[in-house]
Length: 531
Image 1 (cartoon, rainbow, N blue to C red):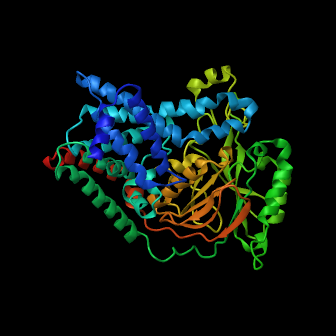
Image 2: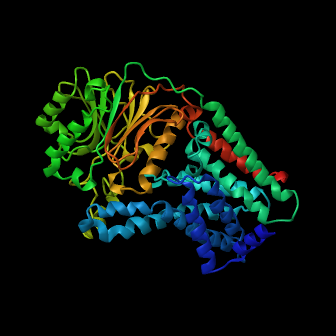
Image 3: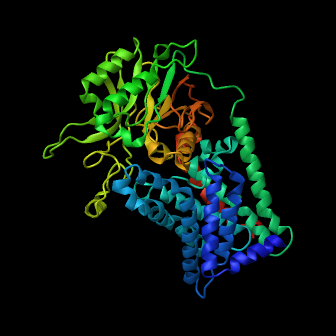
């Protein structure tokens, strides 16, 4: 009875109380995200969302849709406001230049992203059935709105609703079949299922959706327990990795006057012994530094390459993030600058490079349609590169001596499901270099790490992740962390490279399984059993 009374209060709420309920319910969803990962709390935002759509009433069909659109926006605004508040930290790195614009990242971005769940709410209300069928319709509408969010205007799939369940290792294995969006579809349905306990006629019908959701949840746990082997994943023979996490303050990374001191710090830290039995860098085959490691162009700084060569033992290789200058194009006054991963051999020669394809809007470049307006109010990109970084045209594998071919990923390229593989044959592992120093000791780096980790499950590939301030780690193809350095610490991490596993269904077919689940949900929503 109390559950039904709560449902009635939500359904019948109007005006500002209704908006406040939606805002708080959406914000509660952030508790199920990293770093807390309180995944059972997914029932709070999703169940209340169903009741809010139940209460989207009006004299006409379109009035009901508009009411759902409005309340969906408030729900989404609460979710993104609570889940992305940490973006404000980036505006304080150079506070004299960007602090005044903090509301644009902390409030305006969540307000814009909230349009996607608003669209999902409206689409659901357009075909809203009675009974348990509406749970499936809601899951489909919200999952499709998340797919759109991950693709429209270059996409921003950060904190998709499936991430609420991805923190549970067994449940996360479902992503090997259906990817993040398939996990999102199932997560929304599971979280929304208890809504039927508070509405409809008393009796067994109320329990159909929750019982089915519980059965699906148990099935996910069972599949995950079956898929993850009890034994550790074997390692690639002859590979000894050393991950270097400098924990360098963000305001120093782009200060040209700090270049010499930064390089000296990297070299000293890289050669640190991690135990009485180790000999520093002499024990490793591959040394890996994070994204944007230097406030200078490594390829145009021969003295830096000479010092790196002096550090590396014979046949060892450095893999590092660095800005790279391309060739000056006709009619241009300066060369394009790429955010790159560069491979340096033991003679100090750069033997391979990967240039970032998916740049961060407003962080690494300004969208052309808004550039004039943004610069007119005194804003620029966060990175200290005139005109911003240039984007590479296609994703290519990175060839590194002594390692399998790598799928190179820089920063948030790792958050895009289905877009992390290079052209050509399947690589042997993913390499993600990033710099989360912009966001300090906040939720952001934990969320970033969790999303990169899910790519390992989706693709069946190990992941080597090196971050300036953390979290640096080696992850096996099941998403298990085999070695890591925590956020906000300086150190080096010696680790082996796990082997990959056969390509997953998601790696082979992408979102086809997700599309099939959407069709199945739509068909099931029309069955008498769900009414």
